[in-house]
Amino acid sequence: MALPTLHPIHDDDLPEFCRFLTEHLSAERSAQDWAQAFLQGWCADKPNNGFLLRHEGRIVGGIGAIYAERMLRGRAERFCNITSWCVLDEFRTQSGRLAMAVVSQPGWHFTDLTPTEVVSRTLQFFKFKPMDERHLVWPNLPWPGVLAGVRVATDPEHIAALLAPDDARTFRDHRHLPWLRHLAVGRGDAWCHVVWRTTRLKNLTGAMVLAFSDAELFLRHRMTLASHLLLRHGMPFTRVEARLLPRLPRPALELAGYRNKVFRSETLQPADISNLYSELVALDLS
Image 1 (tube, rainbow, N blue to C red):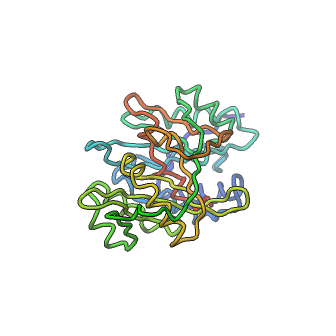
Image 2: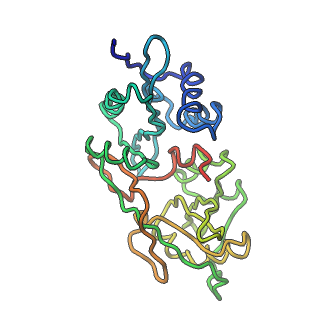
Image 3: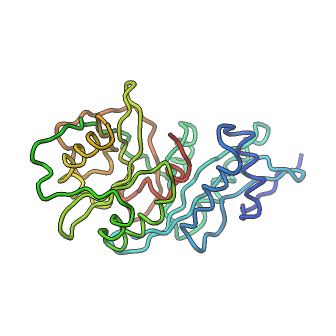
């Protein structure tokens, strides 16, 4: 049997590739849902949407890629987020060709933020590094006095006006995704952009903080944020990945046993790898 041929996934290929994902990876999402994740416009000169395998004219496997350029410490960094790696059983031995095609592209930091255990191990063979999988959880209480001088902004136009230019761009890049919630917390000219969504823990619905623009400001104002989330949204707890924080706050409960997210970069550290600009936010994964 002839080997399947390898091809980049161009925008014109997305309808067919995304139907393949719906049929063989997850029927919970329509082909249109998959396609929208790849068409976010986070990188004006993206090279492709990943790579696919064809055999006798039909798609028999593929690996998706979501590209983004974002500012990090005043420098433009380019990211390739691997997602939706799916190969039919009879062609499973060709899976490595897909991964190699993606990671052989120069000039990108690579991530996979929702890998299965098998995918995580496979990517570590390609020199991806696992990140701290622990989550931190703390109660949201109406802390007395914490609101003095500190405000929480939730109006979209107000948020955009308060944030520094790079943070405002991040907000604009994600504000259209209806499953994400945004706020700015701070005072004066020091404001932290926070992105969160609902999460479930022990049959309770709480707030999962996916990203923030300044870790120190986030920690400094976390009790103000906790009060806001409780009083305005009825969220009894806040949850955040430990890897995103420079130190572990107290009181907080550590949760472990989650699958490691992985990344490959010569210059960046785990705390630099954002959950934004990825399939974690481009798809409604709630």
